Length: 519
Image 1 (tube, rainbow, N blue to C red):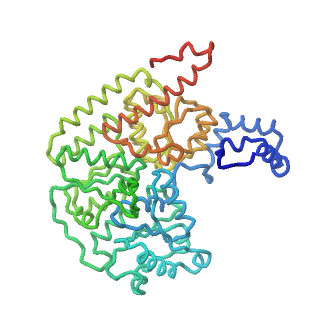
Image 2: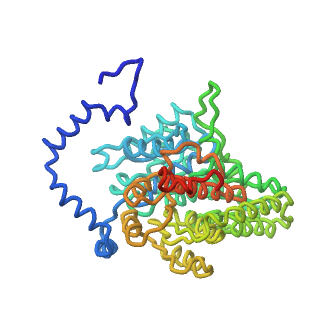
Image 3: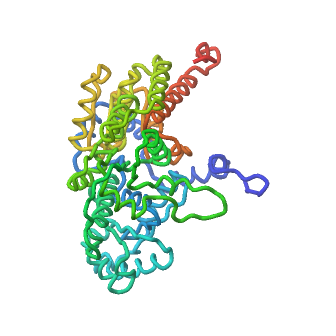
């Protein structure tokens, strides 16, 4: 059917038209040369068996659909959290296009980032000239106050030395000698995006606290009563940072957010393009050294950074993305301990409201079995919350989780009667999880957009509570932290439960005796 301006069909309808159906059928017939349908069906069914699961879990040198991204993605996240800072990735344009699109598709906001445009010759001879030209262009075209440099696997394979390259670039006049260019090596072939977050944030703190790459004297700590907060890599940063600031404001505590991209990915549409919006200023980074304590909200996302801050003499409070009642209780009590201030009555009221909501809905979620996957700290927080509401986190999986993380999750499971029989899977991927969904099925799946393929294959309803979320809009605007965040997660779990319940009771005169108005 020809398209016209009067009737434009989107792809989900357009590709159902007869000419497209014929086109697809011809493609299959003439070019695919696939096995017979019966063989394909038999093989597909075999992948759902215990026998296949055992073979699947025995693989060692192959990863299929990992639930993680590469280090530079985390580094770009960090750079976007600092005021008038331009992320600069020493590598290819294609890699940077991926980072920009990944964030833009999730946050529905433009994401600024540039590359040194390394190509085949730079991969062989090194990318010094790319760095020299790239820094000069970025400085002159985009007028940032700071350029934060990270690397891709291309630069790391050849062994480019960022410290030397940046100094050479300054000598060549790409940027002024005293211009701030913090850097971090973020090889994409090891670790994950949370490792990149950690390395990049550590690089910025070392730059400002350690003498700005030799251009000034190292800072000397003069302790004061302020506190710092580091949120870690968080796909809900827009809503969560607003909630964290509100909590500290209620305490009457002056908090310094180190790395705050919440405004960068929440700019208004008012006719003015803001390439740089909000973020932690350089002065705030320097003052952060003097804080009495730093709250690190995600332990496994900030391991090296936490250690470095502790070495400066600060009290470092390490958490695991606490969610719900118990996790938020612990967070607030730590704020009270560090600052000497009582927990505000407003937050006590919110706690009671969350407990009331959980009690109201307890019968709906009690005993429901969940599989969940994502970043290590987030999985710890979600696991604790599921146990609080009487649900069973049957399969807890994290591709970038290590054995220490697995021990922490197991301790949570062992401490609750709802954790009996539940299992934790570090260093596993979504193909492992697919086997589990067929051989040890659950009621619901908690994950990101990529989980929709597991939902389609296994028929397990998906609750989207993990970065990235491309196929739903604006989830990032609402918190998952604090008591308010616990209520948001509770509602997400309930919405999926009721949607599934309605879908299973919709057949007229067959199941609609339970298609109820009141749930």
